[in-house]
Image (cartoon, rainbow over all chains, first blue to last red; front, side, top):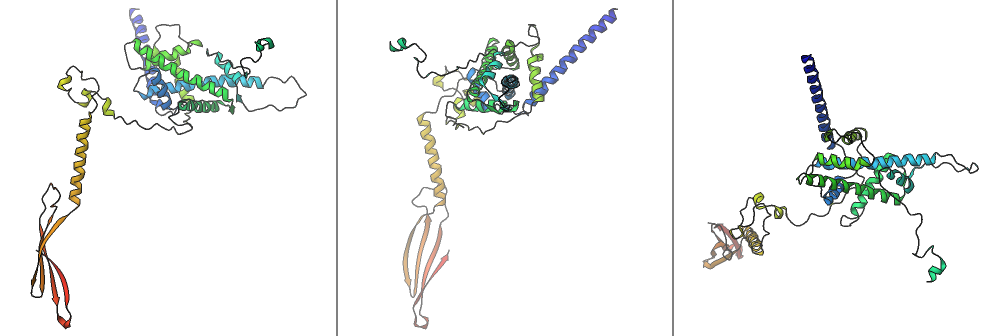
Amino acid sequence: MMSGSGNSSGAASTAGADGRHDDDAALTELLSSLMDYTPTIPDELVEHYLGRSGFNCPDLRLTRLVAVATQKFISDIASDALQHSKARVAAPIKDNKSKQPKDKRLVLTMEDLSKALREYGVNLKHPEYFADSPLTGTDPPTREE
Amino acid sequence: MESPANPNFHGAIATVSVSQICGSVGYTSVQPSALRAFSDVAIRYLLSIGRLCAASAASHNRTHCNLFDLVLSLETLSSTRGFSGGSNPTRPLLESVVLKELMAYLRIVDGIPFAKLILKERERSCSLSSSMSFAQMGMEVPVAMAHVPRWLPCFPDSWEAQKEREKEKGEEKNTVAKEVVVDGSLEGDWMEEGNKLELGFSFDPGLNLLQKRERQKVKFRIRLDSNSARGKRRKNCYLAVD
């Protein structure tokens, strides 16, 4: 039994070691593939903003990883906003008399963007109208004063 | 595209990048206000990553950020939506779900290069050597400044040193010019022997100029013969090199 338990612990340790090796290999592959991948956000822009915030690293692979992470973040938000816009377009039209064809062009609007960003903890509120003066919308006696 | 000197240049680049990403996702058009807000969010995300990485490195007494700092900052930013394994405080960072999602994203999505050429600012006139330390330059600190440590940048060149360098450059130009231009003085006496008129003189190049190397003197004569054949008087000039 002792030998059995020893074997099981040995097997677990080797399995753990194999798992770590696989993770290390995956990480090595990730870092090496970063130099072949061209992110949409240019390295110069990423380096500029990282430098402004105090990020200091001479390794270009980390800069590329930040660019890829940002690109993924934007891509996820854009995908969520796209789902919102598709759901809005696919909603049944109440007025059946109108023969307006469904506009198949997908436009990113502030409404869809704010709904998508809310899930990521970003509150984006778009003002409904712009007032031409601070007194617009107030009562007449207030205006006279 | 705006010029690199414009403070909104970086915002314009971010706007183009975000519009490219939106196009890759499936959008055909975008509202200008939505695009501006979206690019602002992207810039804030970049700044947040940098700030969190720098804070993580500083808390571990480091000045340079590494992969662990980056993973921690990405996990912090993903904490609003949550990620698998976030409740385990002893989780290995290199096996983070955030990193694995990035690996999967890299495998699935093809790289889209930036649409426009980025104009770079002109290189600043300050030379790299001005920011290098004494130790890096292999120089010793002046005796009068012995209290200055060697890991500090070198002192800027004084105006006296610049003047000396300009003088040296000027002397080199002059020496090069002297080697190319040959000037000399002619001294000679006209002698008339019969029908022959001989002029003997020596050519000494560079009498008026300072020379670093001495040149060999060249002597030659110009003879003037008068030919009275056929009743005509001709004068022929001959050059003979001795």
